[in-house]
Length: 491
Image (cartoon, rainbow, N blue to C red; front, side, top):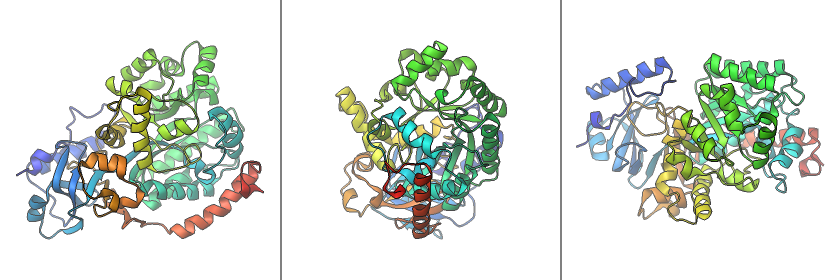
């Protein structure tokens, strides 16, 4: 029999990441001690049953297993026989044929693009930025941020995302915009790491940019589900003065950084011409990597760049679908992971990917590496499940809280319907999820012990209302941005 003490692998202070909040460290360590001593919470709980519990921990899979949820936490993990016997009064959900996974961690996205999905397919990245993103940035407002976040979050949740690392790119010329993202995430029940994609080369001045950072930080501090990071749209989007201010805010303010790095070859060339080194080397030189950093894309990275990322503990967000749509290139995922770099995956923005379907991203990540390397072993289902869960969490330095099914962690889970046609006859649960599943197979999504998706439906917001509001806002956005040549809504 597997006891709670053998399942519990919550880490003590000796092995936590060096930047983990001390209060969280102490609380989780105490919880682990309680569980190890058999002092389970006496509250009633919920048992989530599955034929296969993919833990992203040890053991890797529990067959005919269950997860016990009490409040926001995972209270126990084991076989169905063990837990149903130990907690006979608990309510039961899931089923004997279902597959249960940790909640997926989306390591990069842009809720700022939610109202302009499916536009401008003819452009590469810089053309797309010039013709779409810079046009909508000054028009975005707080209501668009709020409704757009709800719209994208519904799609994310339905594909199993429980944590979204977002960078909202806008020009806050008329007051704070990004707190609307936090309000929406709290309402719909999606965990967020939120940042503002700052730029001072457009209509927003440095004081406006810093005020937006401050407004988002305040909103995140008051949130039940969100954390703040300092955002950098890209090195080329900021003056040297702004970038030094950004680095100072992150390092001396004790915040993480969320930045695009080396997405396209032209970006590398431009920074070399300006600073004499690659963007990654420049970030190291000015001290940006002294703060916990998540770097999105990292497509055009040479061996020296990869060594810098590894030496500085920089996490990487791989965005395979967006990289293909924008013809950016292929991130060297296997090479990065071999260096010990934590590589998560991102759906990127609704306008740079068009889809917010994380399951599509997972499958694409595997296929892209296989065709790039012409090797069937370049990346596999187990690899991509780890990238989707514990590696993505580690890239954001949240692996002490989420990313695996372990006692003492937050109860962020996905329950896949084992009676769905695509998921019957499970030969290998990893391959079933990575290659066969779609959002229609997602039965439940739990975030912090609450169901944000139940029976395949969003629980906390009215979908019809959000859709109706988004139509008017999308029309206003593209009309105000002058995109009549790209959007029927603007005509």
